[in-house]
Length: 198
Length: 226
Image (cartoon, rainbow over all chains, first blue to last red; front, side, top):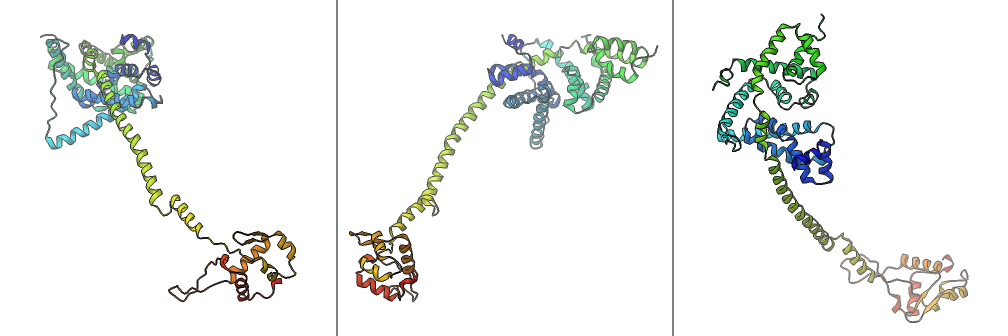
């Protein structure tokens, strides 16, 4: 049912129009579902915690939906959401630093196993996720963000350029360097050598 | 064969080609050019071998699992926020006008400059006005000489029998008022100091002779000066 509605309203502008003039609940759901993975993955890269990324994503959508009627379309919705996400994540990081200053929080994360996938699949995914995350963390921030936005979120260079404020040429160079470094890191890692042997 | 693309251009297109995100035209151009750059050919092979394993991971489904309830939770939080905002809005919508009305009422009843007080004081001061515009009919002739046509003057005057007030034509009335107001001052005994104070006189209570004396006191000798 929801997917059929999503097909009926597949562009951001249609969803915004629906939100402003018609059924705001339905449009809000479509809006969130359309962008939730993008917002969540940006927040996760920034915060490195699934719980924080989840909270941040909710906060981003609440702020976005409150201001959706005043969205003027000067940039794409994704660019707009990216900026909101970065602002909220920065705020969360500041709060986290402030709290850890007083509580000596080591920043370690406790994660729950999802109940929708098998434990074996979960741990395989979990291991790879962690390994890949470690590889990603070895990249400079600009390269890491460019790689993520291009590789995972499949954004165009023009969209990424608007988000990061870097020229398209610079982004292409960053992307190549990020892929090159990741390939070397993964190729030399023990994890990848043992991949599939278990 | 001269390569169409430079080393840098091939380098920039390499990741997208490796992950299958180049369009058909760019892919053909890339394939024609990369064979000229062996270092980039080697890079492409390494990327293919490593990322073929990476791409087995379904990051999309991982994210899907992580984010599946966000829309529900966002709507719940929005509903809570809206309820809270509505309550606050309703409260302020009642409180602010009430406070405004209370402040206005306070201003009306307490301020010295308030319109309410000025109306009240004006009404009080109005009751104290006592016009000096009273002259006996018989004195008119003695006051005014030949310069003013006595007959016409008397014809125009209206005698109010009940209160003994005579209304003169406006020219004479104004002149008479000015004359009396400029010259009449009566010192009061009940004042605490020696200063003489101007006091309104009610001429209703004066008889003709008293008014005559009053005019004599004003040294009115030549009515033609009027």
